[in-house]
Length: 336
Ligand code: PMV
Image (cartoon, rainbow, N blue to C red; front, top):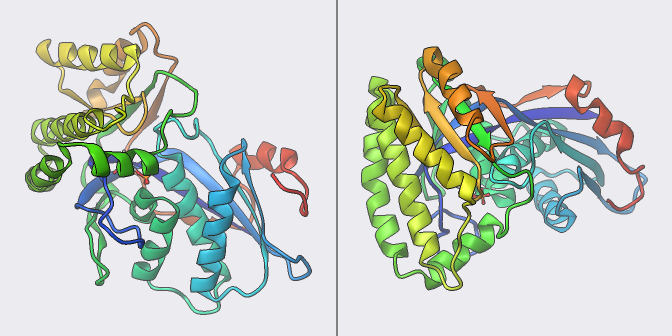
């Protein structure tokens, strides 16, 4: 039995739209920060006597997607025996906090440990993105770029986590699952939003600005590029038919609070993925003040603290926070 754990990541320049074709290639280049402490764990065990793979999420999640992914990954990694898979996370799942990224990065890492040959990083990235596009970015730590194309180095680290000790606060505004999964949201935006082409065009400039800001550790430049890019992604999504509105009233209240903090002299910047939660970047020294301000916004349920994190790891035992999930999991042989 093998466990792997992987951190979530937050996109500073978003992946929102696939290229045509069915290989889950992104339409544009994205840039993320791997988030320490927002972790998913995957337990994988070979089951030589079982007739088929058994998969489970704790709490329950989309097992059909998981089963298809396991079949694909086993095929690509040459794992012949059926496997038993359990996935769990230490933070709210399916609510725009990138739990699918950490989950599929952890699972890819655990399955790779069962492969007879050691797969290259490029091959692992190509597998992980089939589970969730952003999962390929969680295979690396720190600041990570993912660009379209099959050639080597599509997913690269542009700076390690220790390059820039930023604080990241996730304001959870809603613990429920998101309304429209990102896969469907992207498809709908690409197929129906008149702003999709414009979104792809401006992404390149946001990426250049964000990369330069990471290199020079310029929080204002990075934060404004990330905010701009997130708002543009959501603008494109709002233009879809039917429209995609991922925000709640509290989401907007948190945006306004971040802007108020800035007007009052505290550099803090937000980004929002395909859900109502808001992630805020700031200097570690300002983090307690920013956290208090965010926690005081009516409707904010909790604040998760993070900072730049590292790559996945394999373990022989479950991480302490995952032990309860293993106790409640369905026994091998039963469907989740
Ligand atoms: O990785 P997916 O397919 O769940 O899509 C991720 C989409 C966003 O989180 C909104 C943006 C991103 O780049 O992570």
